Length: 351
Image (cartoon, rainbow, N blue to C red; front, side, top):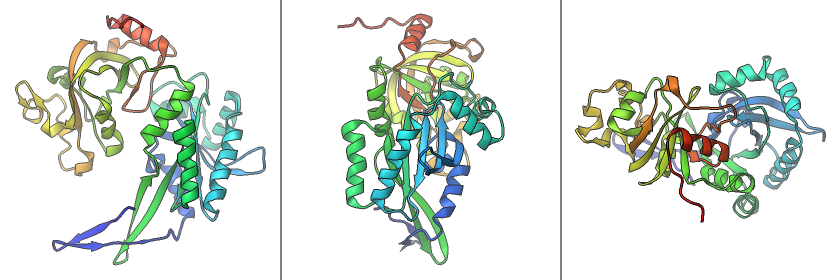
């Protein structure tokens, strides 16, 4: 159960949790910002009609071309919404790539390929809907419905989860918080095991180069980093000392291979051979995020670089694996074969 307190004059004042009085507004909020429910995706449909005479609240697409069904409980009972989202999934899985283009472009009012490139900085995959997932948005679920969602995910690897919206109030001010029923990262991992190849032993890491991060700094001071919110930075904590990573520059390709030497920590605490990272001359000093909330802080992982290239010489081929996540397990065999050859990595012998 989430609790919220207001700090006033050095004292804690508990906020009162109450039901959502304007639950219908959440659909608009999520349609405008899917990150509100913890997904990196673009909305491609709202009140999407199915062939069964029902309407999906929101349909989204992630950077892999997978579809995400987002359904709000609204006035339905918890058990009804679980059954409903499963019924929607049975229909969504039948959608072909041309059908998705047609439906998405009517909603977006523009070419799907253009919108996808603008949103993710990558060309849209040739095949869409290779996977799909379900996200229930509710203020609460009864214990039986919780058990059903947990059973489907944990025992059968179904990509289903619930996000709880909680409203708190103190002195007329309102706050909105969100919590997952299940760890979303674990949900994704379980569902991937059902449909994807075995893990290669290598990790994919998104460098996130740009306003806050410089490849020159990462190479010079031997780290990779992420920040801008826990949704992004927490992914780095998947990595352990000795893990092998291939680093990706969005829009270009793969730019480095290395081995983790130090586990994730706030970048302000990261030590280089010459002292604290933030005491060093940085090509991109904005990574310090001065004046930003603490939850946006940059976090860093130590890396021993074995081979790197400039982004202009990034390694890529048509169909190479890419992902919106900061860190994920690299499973695509064609991509692994390509990267190990390009970066001179000797793969362990199969046993």
